[in-house]
Image (cartoon, rainbow, N blue to C red; front, side, top):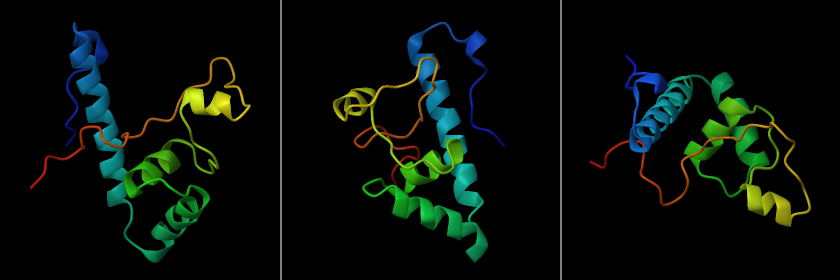
Length: 107
């Protein structure tokens, strides 16, 4: 059962759209976690964790779910500081930023 609120068209305020995106990201993370059942399921995730040092478990799962094989992940400004440019029309990878609201309530 999905925890997502109604689609974007039903939202009038920015806060509602943010909550929708957070709920969708939470569902994506939940699906990725539930898919880790066997050693064969874990292997690609472990390879991704090696490719993406410095990212937490949730971030690696979300990155791998959205861009399998990604080797570098950074914010837009960090990407520019490293001498790279984002291609026009390219969509970002959504993760739960450190210090942001956690996908599940504590406890």
